[in-house]
Image (cartoon, rainbow, N blue to C red; front, side):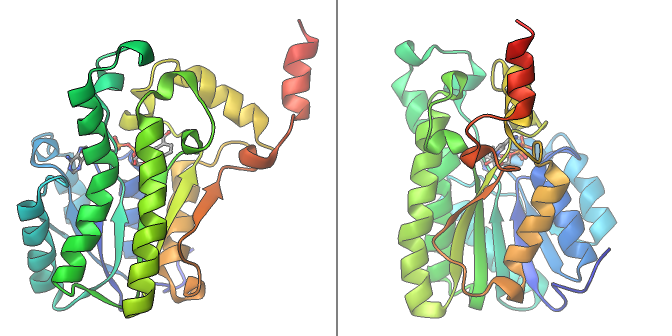
Length: 271
Ligand code: NAI
């Protein structure tokens, strides 16, 4: 049930591809909480047309931007300020893509041009967004910038491949840019480390079903779904989390601190 948590706030939400996207849920919930939103995604994602439905539903403008292009990002922040009638209060980076994962390259046989592409799309784009926003002075004081990460930044997961390195870089950027924007403008920067979630990006990882089930059983609360992730994002855009910054926040039903759970013991006992 909405509580006007974001009443009067304006924000940019990237990465809503279809209704299963985490960003899609965030946009719906942020809108329900009173925020005015600009949606953005890569021009290629626009062609699928799904995002138009969301834009219509929440009365948002769409500004296409390839998040690796400084020119596109400059246009994104400039147009967003025009459309929203001022600076933004929050930005969601919900972008990830690895050509190596997509094309099924083994970790011992990576294509390094693709590796660089994974890093650019999934991690450097977070820096590029903030650098552009800072130069254009596009974020209000006490604003909130958020990226989405995964625990493969800290622990090994066989098929996550070079995305593990991308997430490590993403989380590191949140700390470094968080320090800078905190001191300059009281803007906070965090990443949420989310449970495996059934989305286009998620299910693109080989063996996803298996590690989805494993994480579900290894998490005392079960996997956090996209809806609950969106709730957490809203809380981080709201004024109730003004002093939280430079953190990688675990949103995983307890996965990251569980040793073993009864559910896993039960599976192993059956053997
Ligand atoms: P999704 O596939 O719905 O979203 C990924 C988005 O990235 C898409 O909208 C895609 O168009 C966009 N994108 C790709 N390249 C781009 C570019 N060059 N410029 C702008 N946008 C671009 O999948 P999901 O799961 O909602 O992913 C959102 C974020 O959550 C990603 O950072 C992902 O790594 C992260 N995440 C996902 C988990 C999962 O299991 N689904 C678990 C933990 C984190």
